[in-house]
Length: 420
Length: 101
Image (cartoon, rainbow over all chains, first blue to last red):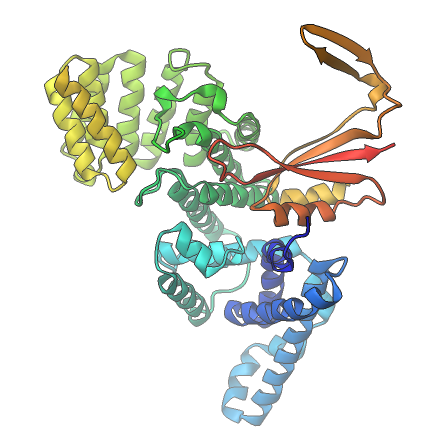
């Protein structure tokens, strides 16, 4: 079987483009220009490779071709700057732009270039949807069409997000660097949040007709592993990687053969992915060894690990999960976490204790449109035998969710209570 | 091989991988109806012996092939297989090596 050369080139591009765009950005100091130059190299490959065959080291070929174009570009710019005195003043601000840097510079610190690119794409000056689109484009090597498909939005919308993001980074003169010192913690947190957003959009699709979108989860997990290998000493990087892989291990069990969502208590645990569980537990172990005060991702991974280690719902270490949620609620102050703590308390100490926590949250303004609140309340009321009240809660939850399959499940639960 | 595995790891695609002892340390179980016959290694009659495997996450066959082509082997053969997924759109490819004798 021979593969379409286009598919081969696409695959090579996905593997190589973060390294190439990262290296070029360090050279030309502008992500947009770097992407254009890298794309020129890709076009050259598309012309030559189908005719002459794919070179034995295609990554090096692309890098060398892109590098030559970058140096030409810098020379032209330097020439142009000499011809136009007004611009020349600006160029003197960055003396490195005047001379074409030594080409061998580009081959150093490939990992660092990718890391710099991640930090730039996830820069806090960008709104979250732009960070996500730019990260998937630059680090994931996804095309605009692929990103649009994954997020169920129109291609021009995604294209515009990417253009705006690149322009904002250029206008703000965001330095192409891995942040150090004071800034580092907040910047790293922003990067981790973007990766988790990508994973979660696949894990619990907030809109659309399907419950999960596996390719986004896989890309999120892959980005997590990239970060873990580039920043091996950061506990929360391993915490997030653990969390995504432990949640990701349940993907196959989370939907029935007909595509309906299957919640944790009904999942067939033999369908959980043991490889991802093993990787997730190892990452959590590393996070715990690097820090004695776990961050929000490590705590959530700790909760997921309790489920991964248990053979069934009854054998789960619910008191430990309650402790972890208590720590997480303290750390984040999030009412959503408090709601999850209520579920765990319901399992550890009975539905009445869980309901008491939920009832205290009913007035929380942040949760008034959150479908999970009435869903949890309905579940606890059902366990307490208060069927009529539970039914109303499930109906309320169904009205609030934007996901079609989840709505169907909630309405079915309400229906069952009605006929009982 | 260390550098290659490092590259897989940095790209975030490596899920698992192991090298296997020679077949002299292994055994086979042959099935025929209800009988189970155990045959001890080495298996000199075999044309192919599996010497190790990688489990990688790739988006499609082209990407899995691209990673496989980069394995620093001078000879031998590498077979690429996709892990079965119920939904069949999880795209994890499973590469395993088959060393020729």
